[in-house]
Image 1: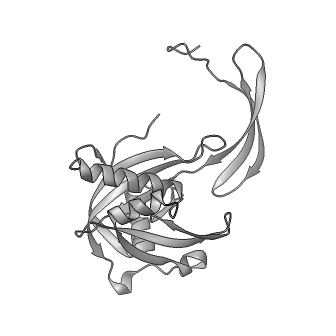
Image 2 (image 1 turned 90 degrees about the vertical axis):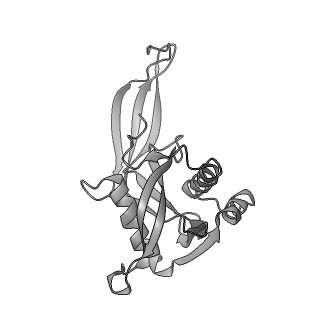
Length: 202
């Protein structure tokens, strides 16, 4: 039992089913309350960052990108994987903002952290708020390939983006969380923001 009286779930064994660049699939044998064990399949993920980029007019940058697992284009935030060795999360967020939206930001804060789908994956996404935006010079912009070559970059008033969430037009988990958190943070005078280097939840 843990200090709070909760059962401590211990991994007795682990079988690797698949190893990839972005995620691994494993089956864990886990101790269960009351004795015995259970098998749990899970996806171990490298983690990701996403960025709510808000301009001086109160507009947020959304990208529309094709996502093959759902077979359609989705409205999303600029986002990407934590797949560069040694890269800090704020630097990764600024890199993705530049690569996907051709923007840099002079100010960056933490908005929200989320486990994207904890029923089967340990993926943790940190969503940042980026402000004081400037455009990346045209000759320094990232060359987008594959699905990214098809990206649309559009700015929406933040309240309009929130309405899109509530209407079911934005369904990407980090976009939903980030947009709602940004609207709440704005409405409370940005008082609850965490610094860009705040520790991840444990």
